[in-house]
Image 1 (cartoon, rainbow, N blue to C red):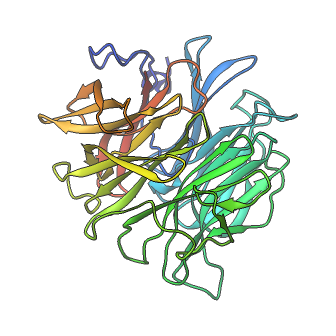
Image 2: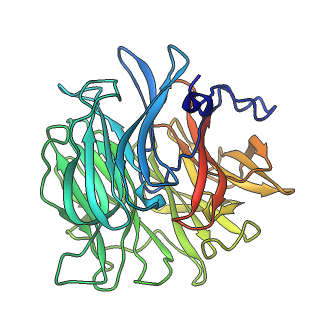
Length: 409
């Protein structure tokens, strides 16, 4: 058995808790919650979960798990960055429609770099890839991929302002009608102006609609607010209440969903849509990054009711350099998953509500001494594993980290 296969042993017995089963592990692998998706399931001739990550040395990989054979796939090196940075984690998607159905695509950027893209040569295969492609040369960060029902592939990212403007960034959208062979011009969707930095948090599709989550702190300052907007089937951007928005969206376009305390950084969590297409979001109020696990990190869930945003506190989460994060179960938006610290241990927990977040039923999925963080659901998952998370061996900054990617549930 190779050293890599030894590192990827499936069915790792790490906990007696029955709620987590079929666990797997990828050594030295880090994902970033802002770069979505990092894991996706696809089934046609195969049944596979595809995983994408960056190593502690800056290597971008794609691997996966073959459900029919019970074996790990890969990994395949997609790109090599010159320096380590967790922002360089890739986003991954599997083309759902058209002649390229089943091909795996990956987008990645370093911390303010050229935005790159690669596509597998064959469906459901990660061993052979087209050449690395440049999507845009403007300084880019946090790519996320989504495909609408009409087969259009979209990438949303933070793009720095083009010269001569400086000290600002915006949420930028590009689209492709040919599975990423060519891309539209940059569309600046969010731009709050000079000395404002946009953080696009999520890009989700619902039929031919697109939904985005974002916040916009001042340059060098703290983010206190969270925003949501969506694009309809005709390409018109709107607030949740259907108010039409002109592009770029500005600070005066609409009020924020939530405004936190001045001494806490509002960190974006997740965005999902319920069966009626209503957005549901999560976010955390974080102390300074790296401030330690004992510092409270309140997490929240908000849902648009059709008339207003209803925001509910969920739990005080752990922090492992960044907040642990809080993800929404795509099969049940009334369930969220996060990590808490309890009695000197870390617990991966799910929280379920039947009353809109007034009360929560808690289930402990995993308990361990090793710091764990960043639970993220696998996209389109029909089989276990449905959830990924990180075991943090080292996480002292965005450039100094060593984590293992685990999956199960």
